[in-house]
Image: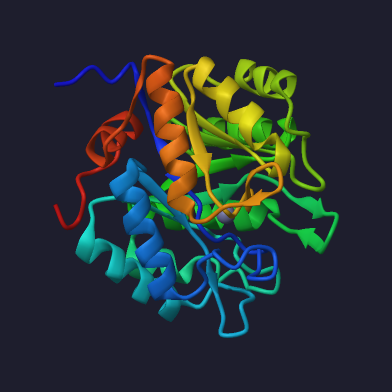
Length: 281
Ligand code: ZN
């Protein structure tokens, strides 16, 4: 078996709930656009894809028909690990935030471990009863939670759920830094959050907007995993919109190699995260 210690999982988050074609005409929105983009990112070295869906007007939706079409297109053409959002629409019900997990059984799904104000759009509600139900549904369907942490309180909430048995070790965290309403995307904040992790946890991080590069570079230095893509950032470099999500993945692969590490394959990502084998392997 290859040595996993120097492997970096690159997650691509191609779409998210917010960016529009006005922000960047290259952001993929339809199932066929998202699937084609994810396949290109997989070929470029991404091992996990974190997916959001959009409705026909381009707004965030938890429509499980769109999830199903996208997931099937990707599973037919790659072995990339799928991570589906559970927070793709502020107007979704608790049921629609989970229905696609029960039907599609992705290997990973986001678990936003606390509530927050989205300063640009409203409340991001993840009350305790919902999180307990979501954790239970994930466990029953073999979906590993990717615990999204926007501030330190959410990490402590995860430790509480670990103690209560709703979450099981080893936990996997995604530090989301620079959201309007969350912790700022600074290296100091990243180091602080990492210091709070329970033993044996795996972790990844992302910076939103211009925090993207500093957080990615410091995460590689701190032996974490990284997430890139237009959900978090539509600008490739100063004054230059990203041409595609794979452009971000390609840069990350280059930086990881320069740091004397390698991007993980999907199978290595599964080993690192303790996931079962791919359903279509
Ligand atoms: Zn997301």
